[in-house]
Image (cartoon, rainbow, N blue to C red; front, side, top):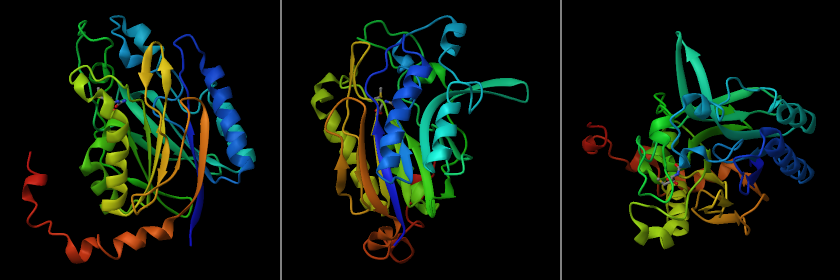
Length: 303
Ligand code: CDT
């Protein structure tokens, strides 16, 4: 067996006025608990360092940029890197990344994996950006990811870490079957997925009562149909008047939820994830090599 003792570290709401230092102190408190429980890896949510700022229309780019990190680690997050190294625990979290490449500024919704030695071993930039580009005042709140971020242009990928192959996806990515299949075909045995999901979906409010159902539905199906562990981690609770779902969970390759948060606040759930269990599914019902028919699936990659 290849056990990765993994913690899903749900964060409760983060107010707009809360400093990164305060959030990092909350993350450190969860990290101490995870280390005390013998965890190898602790996973925090999407855009973990600040409030979910795409809910507001901001015309002033300088104001938007206050939510972005220009380097990683930086002064605010260094304590996470330093403490994790001392504790011998790996971690993953999402943040708004601003990076200059060839003299051009880019902004991404990004997540990283840091190994036990304190090195960033994987970086993922969100591919499926939901929401809209322009202010839509009829909504109770905005979802301006398409305005504030560029979509990631690099394919899904994995890192060799924690004795296995670890992949990442971010929030809306988890609703797309292609995310899991791409990751599985690239060998992922565990996929880390942070999310910020409002209960209210302005375009189809008749589905509001299904948000929690759809959250687990897509991740459980993704885990089972691809034979891999999924670590789904929420930013939860009432954040700046907006209700975000919780239900952070660890899902086995069988599709079973083996651990789940029961609050909408800062909460840790832990499980001994055996990466060898992926073969229970991949050597059997979803043995890709024996049973997949990619030569027939031509519509999948047609644009
Ligand atoms: N953060 C994120 O991607 N949230 C979306 C909200 C619904 S689309 C407006 C999600 O898919 O959960």
